[in-house]
Amino acid sequence: MERVFRNWAGNQSITPAEVRAPASAEQVAAAVRDAAARGTRVRMTGTGHSFTGVALTDGILLRPEALTGVQRVGDGLVRAAAGTPLSVLNRELDRLGLALANMGDVSEQTVAGAIQTGTHGTGRDVGGLADQVAELEMVLADGSAVTVSDGELFDAARVGLGALGILTAVTFRVEPAFLLRGVRRPAVFSDMLFRLEEVLGAEEHLDFFWLPHTDACLVKSGNRSPGPAAPDSAARHWLEAVFLENTLFGALCAAGRRFPSAVPALNGLSARALGSSTRTDKAYKIFTSVRTVRFLEMEYAIPRERLAQALREVRDLVEMGGWPITFPVEVRVTPPSDAWLSTAHGRDTAYVACHVYRPSPSPAYFAGVEEIMTRLSGRPHWGKLHTRDAAYLSTVYPRFGDFTALRDKLDPQRLFANDYLDTVLG
Image 1 (cartoon, helix red, strand yellow):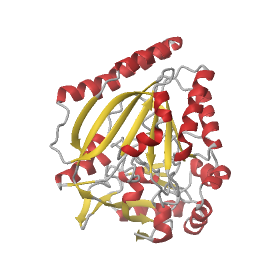
Image 2 (tube, rainbow, N blue to C red):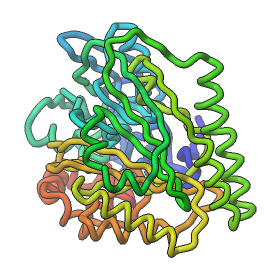
Image 3 (cartoon, rainbow, N blue to C red):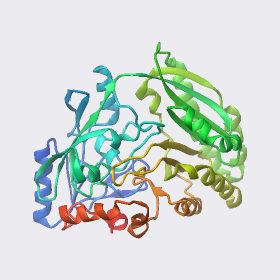
């Protein structure tokens, strides 16, 4: 088994002392006991879609490939092994006539990796994946296996960063499969800023992308539909999702890297190419997207009422900074969450995600965005780039102290720690 672990973006890597691929909770518990006996650390990674070092360890690295599959179905609940990719879960749920109520746009993540880092998607009424969790099975630092469905450990561990234990199974609340009517339309960014609440309140799921150096954005909405299904043809799917959004966009990013001064003009071309489309399809096919162009990302969760201010400041920052930014700025929303370290904990939340082409990092751009977001009481996505530490995070999470106290109780020897957790949790 390959010992070197690299994430999807290629900006995080590590060579652990040992790699294992457990196929059961018992094998996870054995790895935890072995790590404790050796005085080393242990963590379970996912599929590497975090941009931070949240999954890394220099001790025993557990890979998820063998800990997969749907284990139990019934009473509106589905239990899946922690390493099950969301794409596999979606297909199995669809076969059973079931679906998740909401999800993010990346389906390659494992179910455990997605909830542990707070994957959220966008929804007016329905929160992220952690808010759809009914039960967790996990191995604690003493090697014991526990199952929790309520109480403090449940609320802490749903977005637990792997700091409280290693998840071995996740039970989701599910519902009968449903269709979404997905609409894509171009819009004027400056108009959107004046109509944010109207637009956000009108759609069950809304996601929009502003193209820097332009006044153009692409609005994507999804609302439940009685049908009939009207999915894209294979040819149209290839044209939009594969060629235009990935192949051609990747070529424009590469051109912008070679000729930075041309980026505003290239973004202008992209803006003029934005078009409208409508399709009605299975929910998970509307929620998820194809992403093949490698990028780096910073995303902050801010109080929803401060979204317009944040976007105006980011626009001004880009105009004044002079950085050639080819990737759009993405905006999403969710209702409040009761998971302690959910980025939406206790407040209606808006998300502002800034991306850069992987071969053309822009630290100054991210630093400027971060200054804006922290001034607005922003919470960084746990799996995306940021520079915040425990001193700051304790001021924006009301239950932060409760989380770290529970961690002290459950893992006093920091068996599940790594450099990232040392920074963000102290």
